[in-house]
Length: 228
Image 1 (cartoon, rainbow, N blue to C red):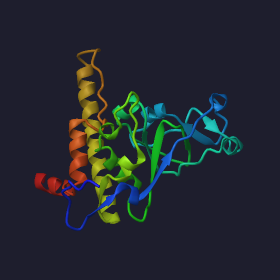
Image 2: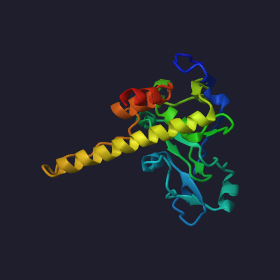
Image 3: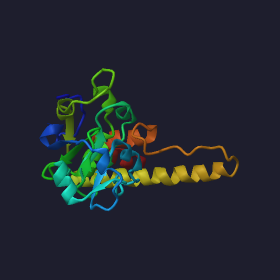
Image 4: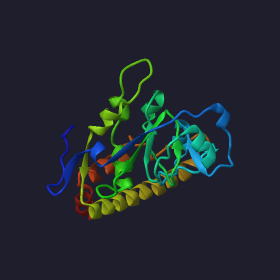
């Protein structure tokens, strides 16, 4: 695993695959698509664009009944799993999302469920946003990510209580960015009708990326204290 991390002495590094489990998606026959009456969401790779500001996905446009899921032999991915694209140009978008409830995913997606003994799902969600998965994809006509390429990544692991503090700090700062961005957008909108609102939650946006990287190096609290 890669070990080019600068982290506090009381943190540890682990292989991503050692702190949870990866889940592969399943084929979704067209004859089962379009049903909105089921209780189980079936997410496609395009669903990643629908994640809310908190990262969670809404109920999917396609659903399955438990009977249909059993017929298709499609496994359930646990609630709070982190979802991401594993094949095609969608990898380049570097989108992440979280499941609010157990759900099914198609075979263009992969998911990671955390072992809560070691990591909080939101900590892993934010950490994953600092990794460019496209750089890990195999060079071919259709790019794809191998499970082992992800499992061998090193992830910094603070104590769980500290992870929760870091999550709160990240989310407080991201809310501030959102409010500031909206205020700037509203003022500019007074003068032009052509302005396009930026997606401030894009994982490689300059300020958001800086916040996440500081937090995941154990340096965010220190940076806040220095400012004050």
